[in-house]
Amino acid sequence: MKPDFSKMTKAELRAYVVAHPDSQAAFDAFVDRFTSEASPGTFSMPREQAEIEEVTKLIQQKVQQMKTNQ
Image 1 (cartoon, rainbow, N blue to C red):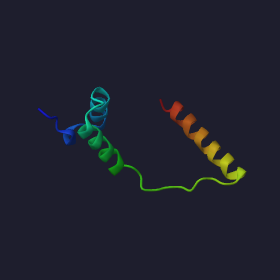
Image 2: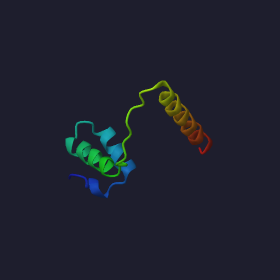
Image 3: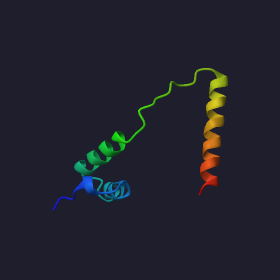
Image 4: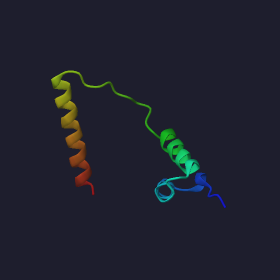
């Protein structure tokens, strides 16, 4: 019996894909689910040193924020 991937939570679907790495249908459902829920915004790559430093700073702040909220 084939599982209904549309009724699985994100965590359940991810666990299924990990447990069944040869299931193309599960992988496709996983990619479709996460792609459809992804933010449509994209950002251009930083090109100058100041931009790189700013992006690095923002990433470090986000990581620290995530550690604090755990």
